[in-house]
Each structure stands twice: as C-alpha cells, then as structure tokens.
Amino acid sequence: MTDHTPVRRTELSTRDPDVARTAIAEACGEHRPHFRGGRREFRFAMRIVQAGPLALYRAAHSMDAWVESGPYPDFMAAHVVRGRFRFVEGDDELLVPAGGVGRYPSRRSVLHWTDVIGTTVRLPMEQVARIAQRRVETPPRDFRFLGLAPVSPAMAHAWAHLSTFLTRMAATPDNGLDQPLVRASLTDLVATTALAVFPNTTMTAAYVPEPRRVAPSVVRRAQAYLEEHAAEPVTVAQVAAACGVGPRGLQAAFQRHLGYSPLTYLRQVRIARAHRDLAAADPATGETVAGIARRWGWTSPGRFAAAYRETYGSRPSETLRK
Image (cartoon, rainbow, N blue to C red; front, side):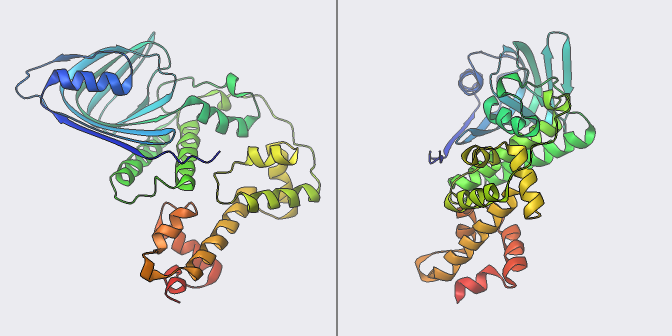
C-alpha cells in the first residue's frame, strides 16, 4: 500500500527543564528523565520529522540527565554530535562519545547523557525485519538485534554518515519526503544500513540453499508487475509473491535471463517514466527537474541527472526545455 500520510514536523525550544522533560517523555516513551545542573543555564531544543514509518529526532540538551526507559519496540539508533550517551541494558553497557553511534536497548534499561547534541533515527522493527527476511528467508518474528554497538568502526562511520545525510535532508525545504517513492527508498536505506551496522540474527543465520530455477515466463510476469506498479513503493518480496516464487529465486532468475536484478529493472522503468514526464512538462507551470526526479524516487537531483545522462545522453534540463 502506498503511504500518502503527510510529513509531520514538530519543533520546540525552551529554557524550562519541566517543559523539556514533558517533551522528551512524549517523544520517546512514558518516562520522565531526571536532570542534574543549574536551571539558569539550561537550554533545550528538539526537532522531530515523521515521514510515514521513518522518524528523525534532533535534540540539544545542556544538562546532565539519566532516565529508566524502554523497552523500545522500534529500532532506534543515536548519533552523538556533542557530549556523550551511556546505555546500560542488564550486563551490557555502551558509552557513546561525540562522533559515535549506538543502538537503543530493546529491553528496559538506563540511559545517561551529558550536555548532548544528537540525532536519533527511529523505524518500526517490522520494517527492519522485512528487509532482513529478504536476506535469509526466515520469518520476521525470528529476527532480532544482538548488541548495542556497531560491528566495526567503519560501520559506525557509515551510520554517522547516514544520520548526517538524513538530518540535512530533513532541514531542507521541498526535500521530497512527501513523495511515496522517496519515503520508501529512505525507509529501505535506513533498514538495510541498520542490518549492516548493528549485530543481528541475519549475521548468524545458517547456510541457505540455492534457490530453485525459475522459468523465463515468470521473469516476464515480474517485469509486467513492475511496470504496472512503478509509481508505488515495490519490494522484491512483493513481486515474487505476485509471481508465485521466492525472492531469492526471482533475483537469481533475473540475473540469469537478463543480467541484472528486479530493482535495476524497476529503476530503468522509473527513469523512462521520468523522461516521459520531462518531455511532456511545461516549465511555465512550475514543473522542475528536481520535482519530477522526486516523483520517481530520486532523492538526489545530481544522481538523477547522472543516471539520466547515462541513459539518454543529455541533461534532464535539456529535455524539460524542449
């Protein structure tokens, strides 16, 4: 189902610790943090952007604080820009300094922070489990994260980079978050990156046998499905279910018969639709290259322009002017 819910934005700036305490409780769960420090120097600011299932929290908090919190049913990960976080979940403890990242515990835990500026990305766990199922074809109910810290410094940097990108995008006017394809693409990006960065059951899954061979006729049916649903957020699992095969079998069949994946084919269809819209658009009505690119799932006009030049040998702006 295509997600057309409007983007919700909430901003708060206050020097009153009680107002901040209430705002944190409403945003992050039914708990009330305890603050330490002078009220006179207190500063708190928070911006929340909710785009469908994906939420981004940006907060600055001048006091030291601690809170008994959780359990968090959603996936939540923090990128600390200034100050530090400390998560304590049973015997598992994680200190996140400035520049570091960490996952919020799934169980009831204690969270400390010190004069912090940070970004938290939040996504329903079922969204992450759905992406995990594509990897190992195990039921989503069996999926879980296994640790709070990233698997390596390189993966921690990858999450920090993603968090920074999302923060800048959310602060940009006309960022495309209201477009279903852009929203779905970002949701999948966050889930896929989370699976690579934080320890989880997909990293310890048993050997998965090779998928059974799929006939060329199934590939043609999958192509027709992708063309019909190109304007909607589409996953390989959805296409495979519509064609009566498994996701890995469909992926293998596309590679065998066409030399590329189902999502690469979908990308080709969408850039062809964008080309059609550019050719039919009237710039005098306010149509722009960036707007058409977002309509067909590109969050970056630069990447869209590069893909368009590779396909059509010209800039999208040239097609729009013609």
